[in-house]
Image (cartoon, rainbow, N blue to C red; front, side, top):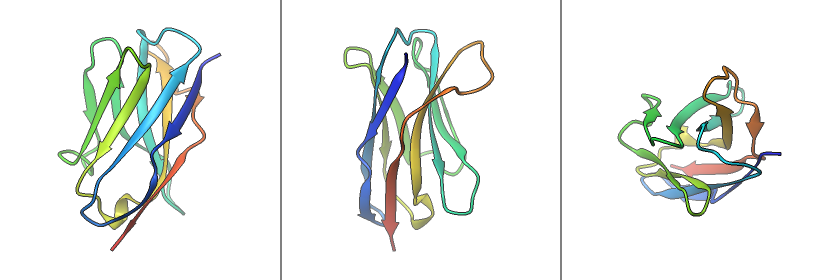
Amino acid sequence: QVQLVESGGGLVQAGGSLRLSCAASGGSFANYLMGWFRQAPGKERELVARINWNIATTYYADSVKGRFTISRDNAKNTVYLQMNSLKPEDTAVYYCSARLLFQAEYNYWGQGTQVTVSS
């Protein structure tokens, strides 16, 4: 059973940085897409960044492009989201998620970690 555990959230001032980690277990992730989503109060969950575990190609939402970087460490089975130049509008619960390459839906989710950016 795939399990995802996030860590690294917290409170930071605008312009600051945080790094989120997602420890993955329960299988080989070579055929998975790993995504970071976020959900702010009253808003829908949105995909922030995604990485193909095997070939490390990436995707970023326009709102975070140039500020956030997604990466993975094969040895540690961990996916990271480095967040720089944080803005108050980045405040949300951030979730790590995974899906197989051939599936349309993300069907594995972590518990979420709160990121709060103060102005």
